[in-house]
Image (cartoon, rainbow over all chains, first blue to last red; front, side, top):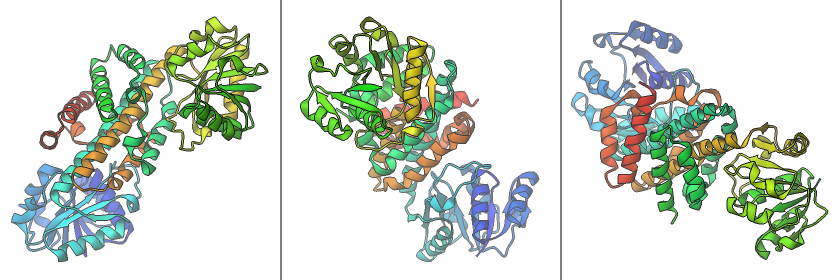
Length: 254
Length: 254
């Protein structure tokens, strides 16, 4: 299946590299800037274009690995014909592509991706959705090339999955940042926190997080919580978070 | 060094087992209840007591791996003499033990511990503090038996370390719980989130969390954030958290 890949950001880069490593036939990369498109095209050993009018017409699958706002804009400006066209976004419904082709779907890898960090796609769940079973089967074949976990979910589920991922990934990473800053303030090495970060993540591989909650809030240890709130007096926004989350933890563990 | 271990909770259990595995000489376990004390004593192959008046007087080191409130209470009710006595608490200052012995300190393993989950102590940072250099050296020897990472920190630093751990462990685990519940609501398997949880934790082994922040807040993607807030309308407390944290992330990444 000849593929044109749209986008040159984190997702397009990691997805393109992973597909290429499995010998998927990426024939062209589209990017808005010459530098972005050419760098990725070189990594993938294919041609590139910065013009939506010069998309390779031999392609059978168009993958829009672009920002949410760019999906409809790009789809409406390329000669889609009846090619299978998919986007890769967590929070955009599949039907946004309906006006542009009879064959459309979603190819959503659930992972936090950085352009310069390698990721083993075999462990990345790929969530697929399509408007026909034969399109779904095509996406299934492509996704199975990459990953051991391919799941069919609908747009509502994908949106919820994305929301859950914001909590367990983006917000969690922000808390790692807060931890890093608290350590700095007392001349402590952030490395000291790494084992507890790893263990906290490893625990949920085997246990429901609800069942392994630890800390002052679940013990309702008011002395420690009050001490912590006082220590956060220079950071009213963290103090606020501390109160709210502790209250929620207590509420979940009456 | 002959040791009496006070406590039968998560920390006492995991610490006792880890010390025993390194052939540390635990001669007695103290617990408030006969069942708790006898179960741990059997695991450690030592005697046990439920009376503070019957503590083994041959001991050279007393480890109070008990709740914060119990530390002074126990210390004031045992014949400490001039034995080295330490507690294991993150948020209690060392000097709480000053009234009871000329030799005192803190032995604080920084990890989230569950009674029934094995943990490799060689990766657990052990933070030590003592009132004299010769006591510190004794604690250093014991800690080095267990762990590759032994650090000397003072009571203020330990308190801050504990606060940081609440953010990167206890609060993070609560966010895993929220993720689990959001998945349930849409009949999605929590397993789908496990790779992104692991990768988010793995990333900070090599990168400052601040430098690898991803998600709608750092992109200032108002469309997705508003959609997420709407989806959380049945959970006003999570909605509130979502707003606050997104605002903080934006603030850190102007």
